[in-house]
Image (cartoon, rainbow, N blue to C red):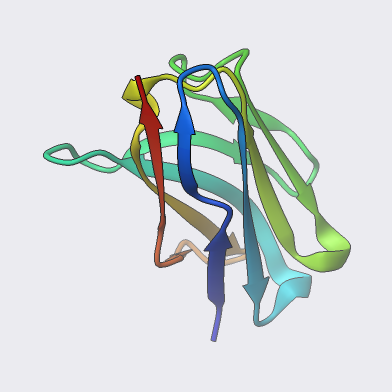
Length: 117
């Protein structure tokens, strides 16, 4: 059983920063891609960033240059450093991961990020 627990969300002013964390439990020696998605009210869940087991990263155009994804394999944790936050970054942020050899993705419960103008 794979479980993901996000933390670090909150309320911040425009231009501020937040750091999200996601701790993964389960068969951690098989953790493959780790990533973040977000869902704003009335919108579908959208890709934010991913990081592979070899630390190759991908970002949505809307967050490039502002967000940084990283992972600590020893702690089976993925992070999302969010800088220069904008009101349009307001959303519930979800952590996701899959296991090597499996196409199934697992999701956390989400953490709310609110950026005030």
